Image 1 (spheres, rainbow, N blue to C red):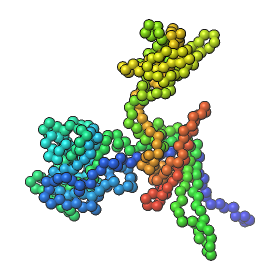
Image 2 (tube, one colour):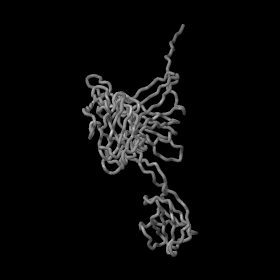
Image 3 (cartoon, one colour):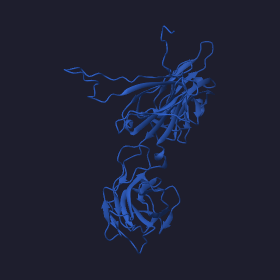
Image 4 (cartoon, one colour):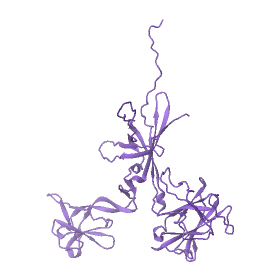
Length: 438
């Protein structure tokens, strides 16, 4: 006979983090939105009765999960040659033109000219991409060699014109059909981009060797009145988590909403070299020639003359652009006009060794740190959580704000700690979890 009942329900615990667990971030930056042309704003068309349907808007095929409405309605013109006024030709002549066409279109012919008639122009013949919800994307890469019409197009600060002619399964030059509510041939949402690199909008960042994914789901309780009111739903809460690890992919800087891609291809690195001061003209002064200094940078330059028993001598720079008489405590820099720079010293230092620290001209990839594009960045986060019974769940959060970005230097092995604020998505949901069933 059993005197006690000590039966227990089966329970599970959360498994420890192991080195194989990773946190994945998907970072999307919005495409530039400054040069878009609504298809109805043409300056001329060969279609006799073009119609515009403002409600037929293509799905955005150039960005991932961008909730903003960047596309506009559709012009049904039977594919007839239609001309649009664009920006200055020199501003996009090495860029990209995109637009959408109806799914029946097989070929798009695009001309760029400084006149509506396109007497002298660049011509591109492009095959549209795969249709999504009735529209195909068209991408015209202007860095590719065009077919010349007449003498071709010469980019300048004058307004350029973009001409678009479409060929489709049902329409030819002699059989144009213009429709609105039917399928029929048309185009939509023309956009002009400065560079193909504008489309570098998607980045996948991984954090591994995790030491913690910290955070809780905290909800406020409403103040009670006559009855219990439950949770406070007067405002949408946000939830915070901190992801900490010791390894990240080398593109992790893209997680910071402050970082943006710059355009500079040359910059500087600071180097220190030892040189010997040589005699200048007539031994009147000492000189050290530097052939790789970044002359656009006016700072980060220092000089120390190597001394004897009394030690070294740090000199001060005079901001004088031409040679003058100097005492023993100063030096100056002179631009030689051929890309080289001369450091000028008092003649007493001729033959002496000198340490020079200066900004060396190097090739660079520039990144800007600015709040300008804060709200142009969209981040998603995903990670796996395991339980002791072997169950595995994949958590996905589609609207995450990076609120803290690691930027510390220490003598110890560094950790990367990212703090995120989980926000509701367009449907009011904070996230979802997939139970993995192999």
